[in-house]
Length: 147
Image 1: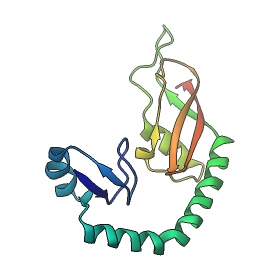
Image 2: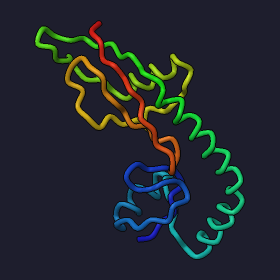
Image 3: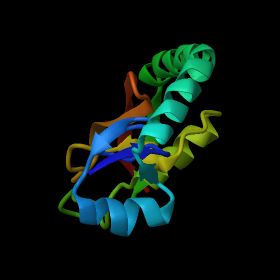
Image 4: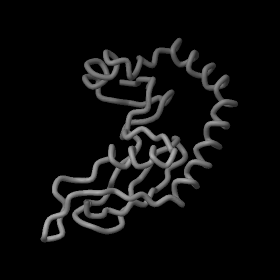
């Protein structure tokens, strides 16, 4: 089943992408939730026109994302966590904590765009990946310290 995405969906695609999904996933989840619409010929023509009109705006957004990426790569965050005698963390470091630490530094990023790819088990320096734009991803370093 071919659909047009209305929003960015991690692992599937970005807004205005034309993607193939299984019919049940499209009909029962994506379309009713408002995340996608059927890729009919008329919807495809509308999509092409929207992409032409948005091309100018997209370049500005991409440039802003690249500037933010360079700012993020030079930033190191400090995340406080409870650490036991064995050196392991109670609980885990979440993307919400990283998003909050970034907002304290004046950088607003939605927690859904942040992913921690390696397990955070104790004190030390780790990296999280930030998806800023369909063509721009960045990494932000964070240090876990004991509370």
